[in-house]
Image (cartoon, rainbow, N blue to C red; front, side):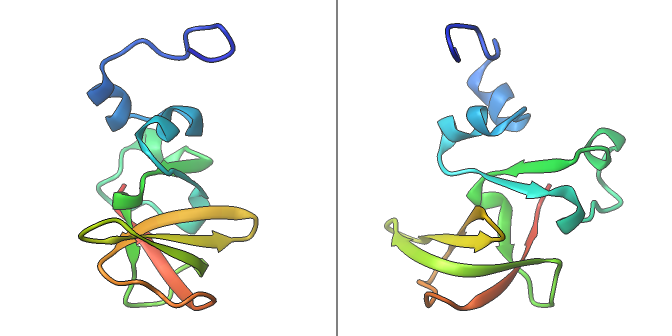
Length: 116
């Protein structure tokens, strides 16, 4: 439900696997909305994903790249969550979240990539 109207009627697994917007993604935890131009689609992605203007990603879908990527972020904070950290970063005006095994120093630059 959103504003008194049904947002989407489906199983939790189906919604999780095919997020339509950030509102839906936020039910599963922190979500990031990333301009599709910053995450070029690979050869395994289907046409509908290639046509997207933005990607809505959960933290487990983003990770630090070993090479520079267009998705350059600055670390804001590391939140300890037991066996990993939730890393809050900023890119432009957008918060971007991902998991990492270690706390990252505030203010450092990281380059991210994703599994779409």
